[in-house]
Image (cartoon, rainbow, N blue to C red; front, side, top):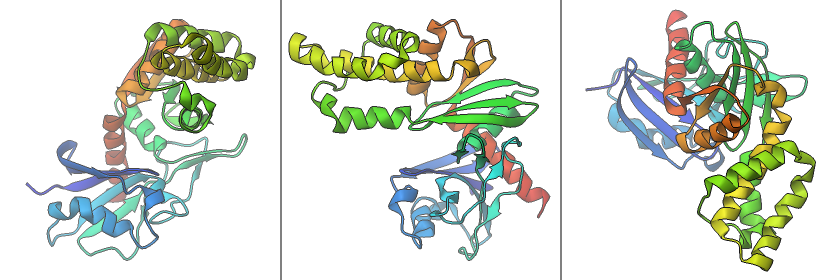
Length: 297
């Protein structure tokens, strides 16, 4: 069965595509040819490596979100300014494509003060709101750059981005802590570290070096150190975002493992929340974007 349309999530490091029949997934494919690994003239070839088997002579809509719409992407999709709906404008048409596809890219969202931007998360938010009518509250989207987004009356009102995931990777792989942190996990160690950092975020830098010292002096298990590193960083993030999540209706959208880690830290502080699958929200949001292109066709 040939798909009706193709959904694409094109980030900095990965490219994912789904063959869609309405809201049903017929097939899926992915590669490591994210925006950062593709030359300016390489976007269509990278996409066709995944989707060419889904194509025939009749043109098919390809709806994409993420960093593919950045200035260095396939086509620049200018940011919409918050406050705004997650997808307030029709996705931008990619010019000069193979006649077998009509490619569109969803614009991101920008915030002037304090300065902030998102690309891809707005599509997940649109997908979440499509199944949560009249939902007001705060959405956390964990990842390399975690977003905290205030939503009201169907609009993104404000948001902040935290580089927690990237800092974790840098510390684990390129700092002195690379000798003391490895694979493994300990729920109790994570919970204690998150609570400590949330109550004393000003101690973060000292707590981090303590992981190295505990290894040198006490031979601390490196998996426990990994859980503590995650706990300290996420706890400091939760301390900074307290005005967002404290006493608010809260949802977490993301990959299951990372979403669960954030959920545990927040529930430990008495927060009430729900979680939503990041891929499902992305596909629902891309379908919303596709509807916009069809309304103006």
